[in-house]
Length: 260
Image (cartoon, rainbow, N blue to C red; front, side, top):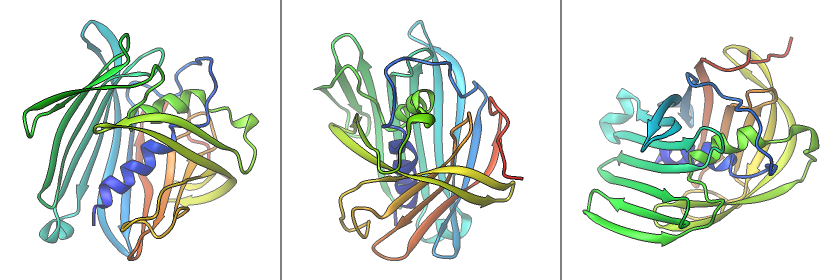
């Protein structure tokens, strides 16, 4: 079961929608760290982390965001997971310059680097596993599956959200351009080890296949405060269910608000 790729797809694809045109101040810091504990059925199977750093890429100031997923010791006996996702985004626009995907999921491996040419609107895909390079046309507003997370955290306008709102944005992943749709479901309270957190609840709409049970089988809860960090993710799978819950955090730009 590819639990980590499912989690990251949920985390990153959520923030590919529901934005405004004007840029605002970054809601994340250069030292933000978030860790999730993932359960499949009732078993702790893996962990996933997101961390942010400030760097320079090809002379441009960027935020370097790293997402990692690892299976637990027990699961690694049967199905070892070591996934790493990276994006380098412009510190002002949050648009990506480079995306890295290096994964090992039970022996299924990928090692891909995508460089986005913002002037020509193309994505250059370097498949380091097979030593091939291909170029694909994209759009000016294209995002990768990690950059989209931070792009929309900056632009999400909570005050204008209405239950049932559906929005779209364009994403480039591996060698394809995607349209992604998301539905806003309202507010909810999520219990965590840190206490109760008031959250915004969303539902990404996905096609039913061998993994997901139906089109609307995914849900994500995001903190209803200035941070807008993911707190909980739930997925009904073809066999069983998966839940990811925030387990650690550090370096948030604003205090995480809790329900008293």
